[in-house]
Length: 283
Image 1 (cartoon, rainbow, N blue to C red):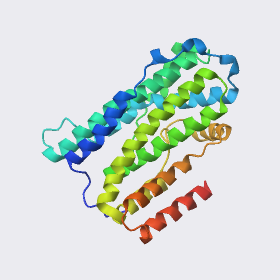
Image 2 (image 1 turned 45 degrees about the vertical axis):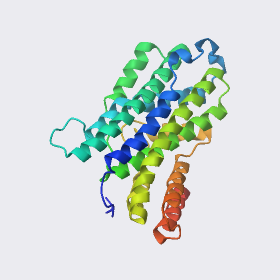
Image 3 (image 1 turned 120 degrees about the horizontal axis):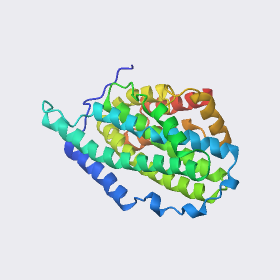
């Protein structure tokens, strides 16, 4: 694990409150439910085999929300009487976001699972069993500092948003096209939250934050990459069918750093951009 020069591992609770409040307010204003979807508009005959494969793949990823949530609740506990008040305050504010985020992701998983059943791609019993096989596997991140976990999630949310947008451009089934648009908009909101959160760290620590961010990019793997059998072959096929490349999301980190660091000419900032481009060239 690369050493970082971060000054502190958590932001002040009040600052976190302001960042979370904006995200939670937006979530409440833009929520939707499965009942809002026109299930009568389904046209499964317009699905290609590539479409069906991509839907199955992303259902596994979205349905792993219990694992994702469990990891962050363990990393940022809110049931520890021995915690200092400021640390608990930060965790408590992050919990507010996690609850709203988990609700979004659970809705995504439910919509995709129902879509498979309604289109005849799977039976209810079959999909529940297959999702349980993967869902029981533990999810964890290897990062030392909270800002690294937040940066990982920033990249993951941006990558997922980009995927849904690209996938939407390739499908002709109208219901799926509408659903993917909704999923992309939710992921964009999640990305905006993590951009604000990581941006606050970079604004505070300046170029000292860059080594930790580079470490995340160098070790980045999409969720389930190391736990789901056949993940890499399946993910590459899905990416090829949708003209999608998750490394495009790395550029969001470069833009964020350039936007918050006061001296864009700082060597470490320029190096981050070159580092990202080098990684993208070899993948």
